[in-house]
Structures are given as C-alpha cells and as structure tokens.
Amino acid sequence: MSKTDGTVIILGAGQAGGQCAASLRRNGFAGRILLVGDEPHPPYQRPPLSKAYLSGEIDESRLWLQPPETWAEQDVQLRLSTRAKRIDPDRKLVIFANGREETYTRLVIATGSRVRTLPVPGAELDGVRYLRSIADVDALKADVQPGKRIAIIGGGYIGLEAASVASKLGAAPIVIEAMDRLLARVAVPEVSEFYRQAHDQRGVSIRLDSQVAALKPKSGLFARGKAVGRIELANGEKIACDSVLVGIGVIPNQELAASCGLTTGNGIVVDEACRTSDPNIYAIGDCAEQLNWLTGTRLRLESVPNALDQAKRAAAAICGVAAPKPEVPWFWSDQFDLKLQTAGLIGAQDTTITRAGPDETPRSFFHLADGVLIAADCINDPQSFMAAKMMIQKRASPDPAALANPDMAMKDVMKAAMAGA
Image (cartoon, rainbow, N blue to C red; front, side, top):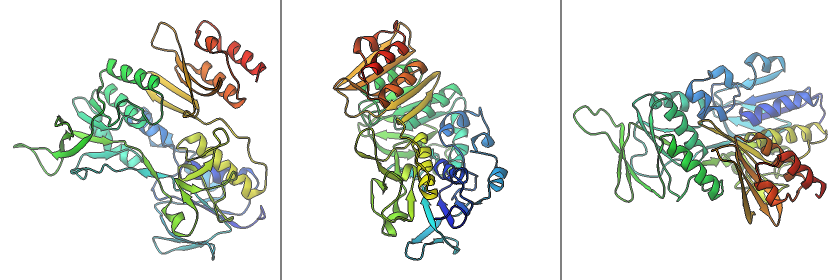
C-alpha cells in the first residue's frame, strides 16, 4: 500500500489503537486514518483508572493519550460512541451499528477485552461494580469513601489496587479470592505471600479459598430498591457490604473478527507483524494472540507495553518500514506505597531467588529456568528491575548467590552475568 493514499480504519480507540494511528503518521503514512471507539472519550490510558483516577489524584484529562485537538492536527479522524457491527473482508467494508459503512485499504482491530462477569445469583443487583472504563470508576468513587464497606471479589492486580485506594480513602475493603493465594494466576507463591502480608498489615481484610455463592439485597426497614447488601460464601459465611467490586479477569473481544472468518484462539491469531489470517487486516492489543519471542509459545498479553509494541509493529508493516526490535514483556502495579515492576514471563521457572534486606522493601524475586533468568518481580527496587530486564533480553545466567545478596550492587551482578551470556 502506498504511504500517500488509501484508508486505514482502526477499530478501538484505546492505547493500542491510539498508538497505531500516531505511529502511522510517524512512519510517513499520508492517507486517511479513521480511529473508531465505542466510548464517548478520546483515547485514554486504562492503568491509572484503578489507581490515581480512582483516588482522585488526577482528573479525566490527565488520562488522555494526547489532547483531543492533537488528533485533528495529526489528521486522524476520531469517531467516538460508535461500534462496529460487521466486517466484510471481500468488499473491505466495515458496517457500523448506526448503519454507516466505511471502506478500508487496511483494517486494524484493537477492540481490547471486556470484564468477566460474576456468574452467581444476585450479580445484577445495584451496587455491583466492574472496573474497566472511566464510567465504571466514576460510579465506583462513591463506594470508596470513609465508612463505606466494599467487598472486592478477585485477588488479582485490579482487586488489590482498588483495595489499596479504598483503604487509603477511609473505606473498609474486604478482598474475597477463590484461589488459595492472591495473584495466583500471575505470580509465584513468594510474591503472593508478600502482598497478603502487606495488605493485612495495612488494614485490608482478605478471605482466601473462598467461593462466592450468591449476592443478596439489603434488608430491613430502610432498605430501598435492589441494592446489594451482603455476600454469601459457599462455606455459609455472610459478609455485609455497601457495594461490591468484581475483578475476576477479562475476555478478549474477538467475536467481530471470528464472525468475518478470521482465525481466533485465545484472541485473534496474528503473525509477528500483527497480520491476521486476512493479509489486509491486523489485530493488536488485548484482543490479539501472538507467538512470543521470549517463551516460544502463543500468548495473549494484557499489558500496555505489549499493546504499544504491537501497535508500532502493525503500523510499520502497513507502511513497509522496519519493525521495532522485540522487547522483554513488562508490567507494573501500584498498591499503597509499593511499586511492583515485573520483567519477563513466569511459567517455566524451576528456581525463585529472593533478594531482600531487613526492611519490607526494596525486595525482588528472580525466577530462573536451568540457570537462565526468565522473569523478575521487583518491589520498590527499580535498579533490580532494569538490570533484570537487560539480563532477560540476553538470556543471561546470573550467579544465584549474587542475586540473593542485597549488599552486592545489581549493576555488578548484571555485568558479571552479561559477560558470560
């Protein structure tokens, strides 16, 4: 496709879609770019929703990827509050729910993911919240005020971040997790235990190995409507609450792609350039499943760095320019005064080494497979995070004793490991 003509339609105006539009212009594409989003807001960041935006530290405008007028300056057409209904690959046509149609030269699907809903009786009661959008958080803010008791179902990152904010604002959060430890799907037991202790010491109640059986409405003389009032666990325990936040994972929005014949699995299947099974259609972000260079397996990564990387790859392929070099996957989470930075991907590790001094932090957990560093979880320890990221990139084998020694500078641990990589 020529850089000077053609139309690129991007379905999804989140960080992946916004970055793709910006990268197309940066790579010299001069044709038409139509960026379509189903929310009324311009492209914005989602990670701060459960942190700084929920706490009130920043306002909505601080979430935006760039000022709305900048999109017009870049000649990117924003079409908000608009949902795609169908894709016709043969005619290179997108049909929208409002009846409008648009033809494309290249199509980028960046439809992200949606929350997994709670499958128990009472989940439809008023006061049962999810956290995925600005509107979700705007509704949630009233539930994290002093004196409020909020039950958080799900002990993953979203649930723990929301619990930390609620606690800081004077609410009384209780986290209910079905597994036998926090962060069970994304972290090793050592990290899970660290965060269990950290939340417990800061006043957050936690129930592990606890399955929710039902949500019940408030009862009594002053109860009104169908507002949630308590949670009933499978073991018979009843937990009173003023509201419920559900954070039990997300589901990729791949139905639109599947309905037009694109190959899907745990997401829309793409190659290293983010092309789908149709060479004129790309998929990026939370909805895309791609072969990961680090693990050698197909993965769907729910992270901002991955979304931005895939956006840049798709834009490069559309413009016919070189793709960026692959980057080590990384993530972060802010809870209370604890900043977690994770590099690499766990799963294949056979050893976890803890690096810690006498205080709660800095503390890091290094994960090795056959002596090779494959991942690291670093809490208030940016030096270890940066060193680990570089060692993972080079598939280095650091000395386990040196990793565990907080008196040895991480830069020296890294230099020795890189020399032998």
